[in-house]
Length: 189
Image 1 (spheres, rainbow, N blue to C red):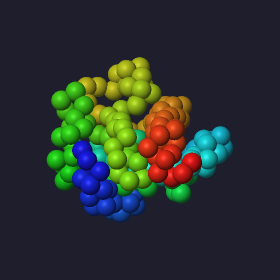
Image 2 (image 1 turned 30 degrees about the horizontal axis):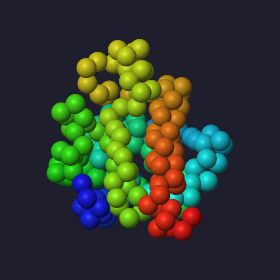
Image 3 (image 1 turned 30 degrees about the vertical axis):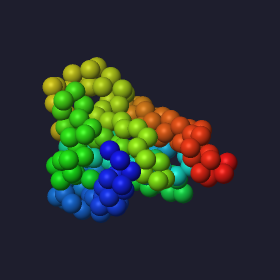
Image 4 (image 1 turned 45 degrees about the horizontal axis):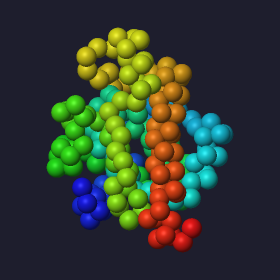
C-alpha cells in the first residue's frame, strides 16, 4: 500500500456520523447505544490532548457487524478527543474490497481494521479484528464462533478494557510517528 493509494482511500472514506447514516436506523442505533455508554477517563483524555503528530486513520468496518458496533464507537471517541491529531474516516469493507484484501487477518476479511498512516499517508501500522479485551470477554462468556449480535449488551468493564486496548494502539502509533527520524526531519522537531 503506497501513500497515494492510502490518500485516495482516506479521502473517499466518510466521517463517523456520515458512515452511520449508510446503515439502517436499527444498525445506527446499535452504534449510538455503545457510543453513549462509553466515556474516556480524564487521564485518557489528557493523553490524547498531548498528541502532537498528525495521523490519518482509515477504519474498515461493517455497519451491520456486531464487533464493529461494539468497537467502532470506542474508536470514534478516541478520535474526537484528539481532533488536532487524529483524522479518522470510515469505509465499508465490502465497498473497499481491494483495501480489505490487503489487510486480511488469518485469511479472513475481519472488521473492524484501523489502518494508521502518517500525516503524508505513509503506512505506519494496521490493527484490527477484536482487541485482546474483546477476545478475553468472548472466551469467558462463550459468545459463540461468530461475532455477537448487534445490540448485544456489553458490560462496562469489558467496554473499558476494549477502549484502553484501542487507545494503546493509537498511542503506539503516535509515539512511533513522534519518534520517527523521517518525520522529525520533515517537521523540524
